Image (cartoon, rainbow, N blue to C red):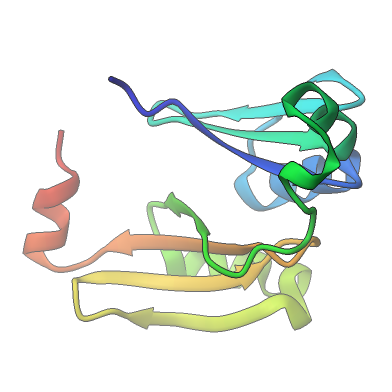
Length: 134
């Protein structure tokens, strides 16, 4: 089995596409007005509109802008540089400025326009760096 992607359901696909393009610097592929993907070497972040829920059994399957348990995470080369680059853009969506976590990652936590948590992190300890060497 291979983990392939995580999908965010939103009422505004274009808004999230613009946000993730800005924060990641990666152009997303907008397949339709209802579906886009940010593809990386490690996996894909998919963005689907609420209209796609009909294909999965109805609107009751998921609720946009209601996540309170998952964090979308991106490993970046220098989290402090990303913080300097994005500081004005993320503004009030900042949850935590770069902080070194007990497991060895330096982490920047903020929210996307739908309120989903986004973590940019850089491994900084020898153990954390070794974990990501593949």
